[in-house]
Image (cartoon, rainbow, N blue to C red; front, side, top):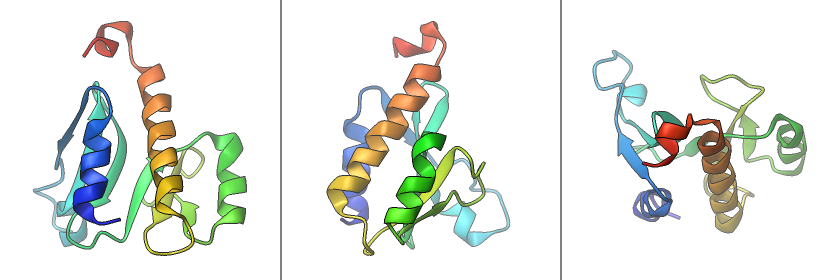
Length: 120
């Protein structure tokens, strides 16, 4: 998977939009982070220049199992390690599994939105 395929998949989910919220921070890596949102909350982010991993929300009950099964899944970078995971590209996590995890993250975040935001 490349950045274009990744971005296209994320944007194909209902009501998703993207933005780069960290353009004014000193850290170059963070400036290049693209976040995908549903409603007012993000469910996934990725560095568009390096494209090394994505960070996604995960059910805490599944997180440990995923990290044990795949070396390419680690606790979420700069996020709450209980609820977020980092999924590395070009390792042992197949592209279809990455898409499945992105969709699960989207669903988790969508379900947490207030009713008025779910209609977006």
